[in-house]
Image 1 (cartoon, rainbow, N blue to C red):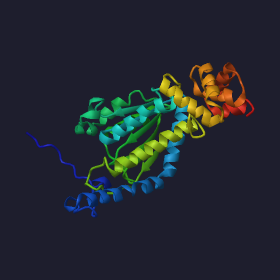
Image 2: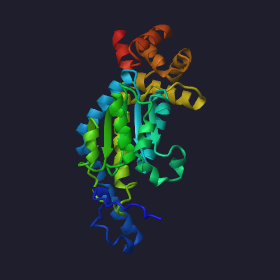
Image 3: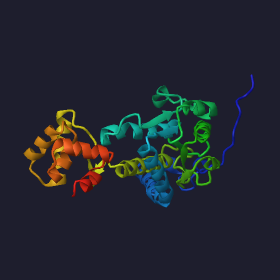
Image 4: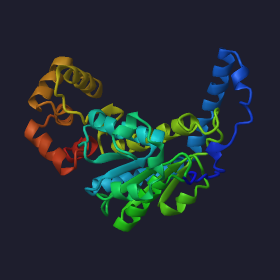
Length: 303
């Protein structure tokens, strides 16, 4: 029986952290302080990548505004973080659940039961990206910057004529050449060597939060800093939406609740009615014409 191939890697996330050699000898509180001090370096590393994140946001907005989709591709911790981000957008902003899609190496089973070998499958990445089309955006996530599954997805994206973004913890990732935008966050060596669910994972979560939130804001799924894209389909959501309407308009709760009822639970329609005095059909028609942006609808109606 032939031994499995051994690959020696020199990427930043696999290096040994010189500041944590004695972590196993520390008292618990000191150990936690050390982990926390390493975690504190992550936001600064993400801040250095903001220009690239902005480029990715613009690509995401263009894809969704043009009728395309955003696809996330990742394996292991990266794929799980991407899956969580995509899953939380519909209930938060009201975007259809087929517009931002997460593809995790190994499928749903691998979300809860690690299948480490699948990340080495270039062809699996290509196969999972089979539905990618021109006009879509592919976002590949790999802490090491070298995962073959992600490489396969990027390869298929290029073939399909789709734009692509790569998010890594290696600013010098060899895969960067395969993407239109490379967000390489220099998080450095982990507290525990190679445990990329830590600083690299935190960086990916921050990047995804910033990316998807900025895309939703740019597409008009918010008004100011308020969520207005969600349709109130139950009592809890209805109460939350009434609160949002009162904060946005300064009007009494009963007036906001009445407007929400007239708008069949559509917060944006209710908000436009309250701020302009327009009737429900006019507000709804105007919002459709401006692709759901409350700010644009207000301008159209002279506010």
